[in-house]
Length: 157
Ligand code: 4NP
Image 1: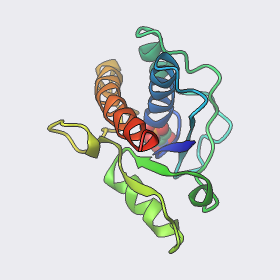
Image 2: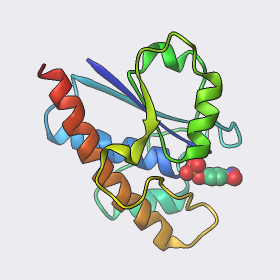
Image 3: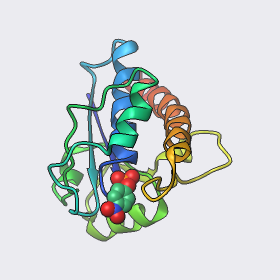
């Protein structure tokens, strides 16, 4: 069993998109019983809220349903539960490093680092137009493939 947590700032745009895309990929590969998935935000502004309607609409165009997801804030206890804590940008990563216990044994890093992309961060689409949400999906789809290949290899060891 591997546990994966996706992190962004508000947990209403990028990390729920990653949660939904990765979950659907895991289900398609028949690995849902092997991988637990969640997402959270470093900030508390949107706790309890569903994903941003623009993120939900962009995902639904690609067959990904985010409607069951609700925002929560990342907490230090997450480090005791998750094996992979994947941050969307460097700011998220530094917020996480600030609350990461010294004995954390898992992987904390940028979500895009495993994918062969020219970008290292998933840009915040919140204050931009709809194209930003499609770009988030493109990046998240590539990075999800790479992360799932990596985890599948670990599970097969
Ligand atoms: P997210 O996007 O971190 O991808 O969920 C944002 C959502 C809300 C805000 C900023 C980014 N905000 O400032 O409220």
